[in-house]
Length: 130
Ligand code: MN
View 1 (spheres, helix red, strand yellow):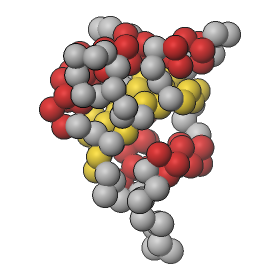
View 2 (spheres, rainbow, N blue to C red):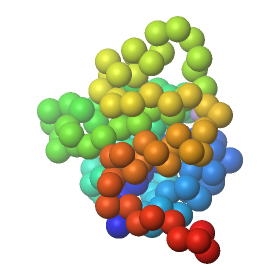
View 3 (tube, rainbow, N blue to C red):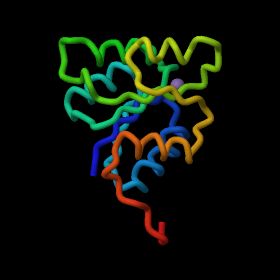
């Protein structure tokens, strides 16, 4: 079992992603804004971070930059950016800020599951009872 932190202010997206993560057998943590997301990451040392870009305080790019700063030990934790920003260049911006992967909203469950299993290969295979 791995620990996955989702930094996201939208409760509907949070619940959708929570179902995917827990179905994979992982522990799910949630923070509703960027600053508390960084605090929780420093406290909980998640194995994977899912990161919304449009957050109520600092944006996801800034969150990624702070997580990647040399002042903390979160230099290498994988970060998947998940955002509704469909503007050209946003993917590049997320990657430049330190994210490993960029996914667009609405969240595609199949794609999310594949990405998470790629970063956390010890996930249990969901059984027939789901
Ligand atoms: Mn948001």
